[in-house]
Amino acid sequence: MAAKTIKVTQTGSPIRRPTDQRATLIGLGLNKLHRTRELQDTPAVRGMIAKVQHMVKVED
Image 1: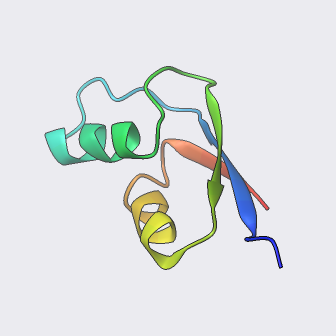
Image 2 (image 1 turned 180 degrees about the horizontal axis):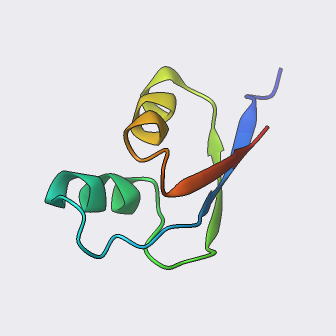
């Protein structure tokens, strides 16, 4: 069975955001606006998305 994936797109800028939120975006593989990554749907990734939910868009 293949692992479920989710699409994460950066919609907000990390300018004037705390350092840990910038690091979370980089950890998700996002560092420029409108960049999209397809990631495995794991609790760790979901936690990272929850931390920067105001700067990303998630599609199942």
